[in-house]
Length: 123
Image (tube, rainbow, N blue to C red):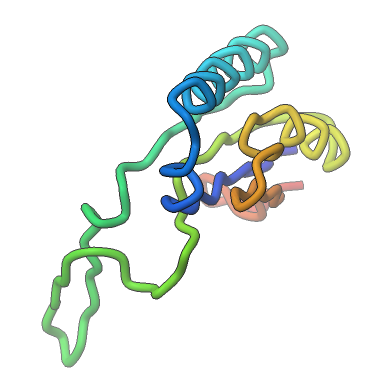
């Protein structure tokens, strides 16, 4: 079963961390990635740039309009994700609990099963 483990960040929370705490998060992600590779459960992981560098595209009356920056007024933004293939939801939750962000107040880790992939409904 495939699961998306998404990382929701709050820039204010990250800015309040010490350099050592930030380094520990990075090292923790490195160890987590290596463990997922070793277990064969990692499909892909990606980190996203700051939402201030985003572009929002809308189409109205057939004409595209592009605006800079995040569309939603929110404190938290999608900061990255892991796409994993594991036995069941319980295992995906177990994996998500190993991500350093899960232990930091104000950051979020969400687990959602993939419903549709490559043109086929997931079993």
